[in-house]
Image (cartoon, rainbow, N blue to C red; front, side, top):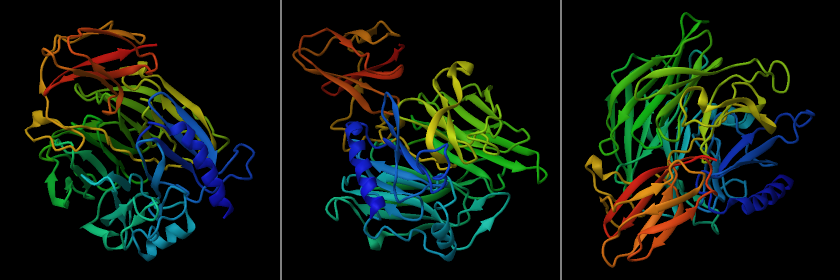
Length: 512
């Protein structure tokens, strides 16, 4: 009871920071170690992330995280669902109604009873159910038996679990007849990735088949899983050890990391594979394989917010790849810093692209510091990697929350209609004589435009993940407006004018 009371207290405290931060506001940190260590102030904490900042809050809570994590917040930034692959927590941090016993098997029980949760990274993802604001669906890996090879656990299923968040007085309920539904029975590589369909409503969910070049693809529609198919990716066969599959923020690219000891026990071969992705058909094409081998394994990858760069790492080196030119640049090297002491070295492991436009890099060890890529949209060393610069109040292992781009909209240029519930109409392109100046700017901007006669307009600014950050209604006959946008952090934004069924867009760069 004490843990529950403390969690609720922290949760209510967090609410004051949360207004308008959206589905990706929370990244939960830590597990049940280190309380007697003078270097930490708590065993657990969380990041509160918005478009401008990140706040670290120490806390006590019931759920620990070792490798697997998925969270969902509402549009006001209130955490409503969390899971570590073993059970599902509600907004109070306690077990959601019917939320225990994910992936039931004796092997799961051993991990869930004695450790910090399911030991597979990116093994869970929570998605809003299409056209039903009361439902969320969890996709999760599971085991009946354990296949283990070269430091790697092989999931043997992909399952789904449906949550009604409106049930149980708003705390949510796992629907028993829709819990632990096996969708794929096959040996799979670590990780699940998801991307909005080009229609802006449905979702693609993918998982790689272990020791092949096959990928499973399924489509989630308002009717449930519509279809499941496989595709050959036409890349060298990856014998286990595939890591962190994910889509770029714009949905047009897909990537994963591969590492393998040759010969065991080393040195290690490592590469990054990335592809074009068609959001309408779910088809992958144009494969690229970039070698990043060194004496240590590689695994971490993450796209930049503008989708132009792909960051990838071994435990010792962090690289930036220009996805258009396949150019690889070394942007950071492990400086053998111990956090807080030997043997806990801050190497490179999982990466998280946060809503504030930065990328946070965890280590393969249990440490109390994380690396930060401050300007991931900038080329080469200008991306500004700051090693072990973010100090945590608790020990953090490899757990890395996976948030797909929930705010990706329609793309009718791909040939599919716009079906998003948030899109009242489909827009065609029109220039409106639209301009923004100066650009780049420190925040003070002037927009000029020409609306249709006697028609209103709407000016919107969105971040590179598609979230609307600023709106202004343009009155009829108006042609010019001045705005102070200094509240936006430095970065690249999309500016849009809409009127009737037409729209115009341009990019805006803010530099403080």
